[in-house]
Image (cartoon, rainbow, N blue to C red; front, side):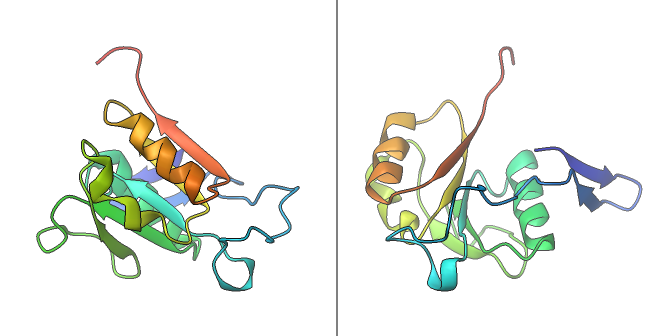
Length: 135
């Protein structure tokens, strides 16, 4: 996904078309889908540089978002996003964050196996993995 940002105004001005488009084969009939076939995106690292942009972009398109943060009382996330507490290094701390989730934006370098285990149990339909070849 590419977020278009105006750094002079420190705000998102748009996203590339289709960044959060539904899967054409999806009829909103997943057993764990939110009410009325809506999607719910779980964003890991929601207070970081990229995660915060993903949350803001999804909200700007009226997509329901759940932000996974380590310390929800200290975390600054945009109004409209749900908060979920969890540590990506400990899969048992974020199991409940997957309730009614259809898509996950995942940071690489953490307990990816644990995240994938919970995603599979929750019937998540789409995972976007953010990774880099070099840091």
